[in-house]
Length: 110
Image (tube, rainbow, N blue to C red):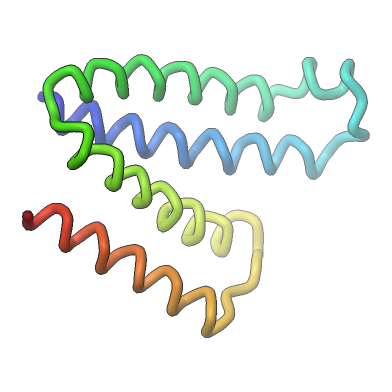
């Protein structure tokens, strides 16, 4: 169950990034517009839930294993940014992404 909490925590953290980016694309950067933007608020809620699940996960999983898995969040954000935000993907970014994935695989198999 702890591994499920870890995975959901990572997914929620990635979703939080996307939601907050979407929120900032629609507003003027003022305190009032930030605290009333549903995407930003939803992103912060996702972060809160992510943190709660993370605490439960690391109480049962070695931190030296769990923390590197957070790098999967970078991969998820990279992919979602391309599909949901229309951000570009360069060869260099793709190479970096592959490096991250290979590192996570190596840690997961250890």
